[in-house]
Length: 337
Ligand SMILES: [Zn+2]
Image (cartoon, rainbow, N blue to C red):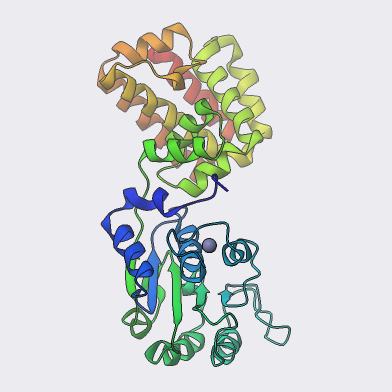
């Protein structure tokens, strides 16, 4: 279980996490918590940790990860954890709404919550992406938030809390997760068994989203594509290869955004190298000429390259062919070294 997410992982998010852990230990957590933050910041992971901790049977370290409660939470089989999310109806009768969380699900949850918790401890209601609730569902939820049954805790997650009714928001304590620092992402990826070089690269590419970084490290297609981009732009550097590279991208149109993201990330890695002058494994695969560029180039040259990538994105948005865009990018990149 040592790869499993832990409260420890969330400590860099700030003191609120320690306070929260303490409140859970003392049985004093607020009855409704709303975890907000951008995509991939770990909202749902934290919500499940809180649910585990509230249901865990261990006396000391909650969640312990090994008691029968913790195991059933991780297997989604705990009778006192009710999870509500779009597209997963609570009962066969509840309307199968793919676009939202229907009021029927909230009614069913209220019905289930009216009995004493099965295990005699706490009950946790987890509502993922709470903004998916219809206004009717939110109004229905409001009733139970106003008078929550004893030992019942609501943990909501939302990337768009502004889409929730003010009345619902005002009943919840907010906990905002921030984008993660690169070093923390690297630590967590390595803890989960990721290859160190891949962990560094994914951390640089994920814009602070730990969820996206985890997804990237496991995505073999992405690494193949990234290697291809590094080879074409930062290794071979032959003008004669421009046509063959750009025509390959013609077939690969769907990945254009990933091309722009990867180029931006490579330029950013070089800028960091320029400033910190520290050996950086992430430049593995770059030619000597590019490494020299990374070590010595005038900062304006990096800005020039970043601007070319912005231009490329704009052109792509206005339907210029990807082949022509890649050719221009290759020429610009070859032109600076
Ligand atoms: Zn436990």
